[in-house]
Length: 155
Image (tube, rainbow, N blue to C red; front, side):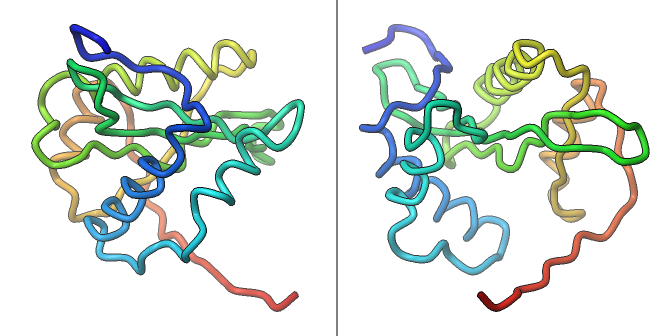
């Protein structure tokens, strides 16, 4: 147990809670819930190879409860001709926002970028998520206007 809020790398035992937080995150962002079996799929991505691409950081409230997470993975920028760290998710459960855990998660994500020798982190948030936008603005992040698309392809 921790006496103060903390951020650490996820462990296999955290996966059911991370999957639950991902479900809450999807609900918050008005998206479809993750498909069943997410904890197992995340386990494969995070712990199934000697050098996993995906990284997952978890935020613990005082007392040790996992109340948030951030995931990130290296990606490529054709325009810049280099890699950056893409933060896919950052989420804190209701009741745990505004307590400094988001900043701790962002510090951990930028630490992952530095550890990989990367100089930039990129991410997106819904245009209606004013709280997140204010948070990212306070960090000094800059917004780029783009529309994100998704296209399912058959196997």
